[in-house]
Amino acid sequence: MKYILDNGNIVANRRILDVGCGCGAGAIAAAMMKAERVTANDTDACAVIAAKINADLNNVTIETSINNFIGAKCENFDTILIGDMFYDEEFANTLFEWLISLAADGKTILIGDPGRHGLTKKRRENISLLAKYKLPKETCIENRGFTESTLWILNKW
Image (cartoon, rainbow, N blue to C red; front, side):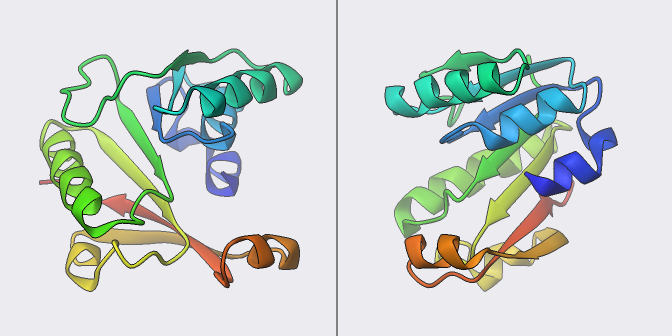
């Protein structure tokens, strides 16, 4: 995540959980910016393997997990990274309720999203925009026409 690389203080010395980590970009960026501990998490075992390989290629250490953390208290983490997970309305409801509960417990919640329909206007009332990035042309082709990505922070409850 470019924002993390440009603003390392947001993760430095913090315990990071990257939920739905995919290839591990968020987790790797957090590790590069001196997070205390980073866990790349995805219920897709292939994604977790890819995250671990990419971390090794980038000379950073991360932990990995295929556990489903959604709904968990996450006491061992300070910051939760969510990347492109609002693709389904029903799942978005469950996800957002969980994120609100974590924010109420004092966790920092960072949400990366390319404009998926599940990150509704109502949900956006509870988050603040941190950054907006244009996607490279080759990425736009692969991402069904999305041309930009945004990074949000969930407001404290």
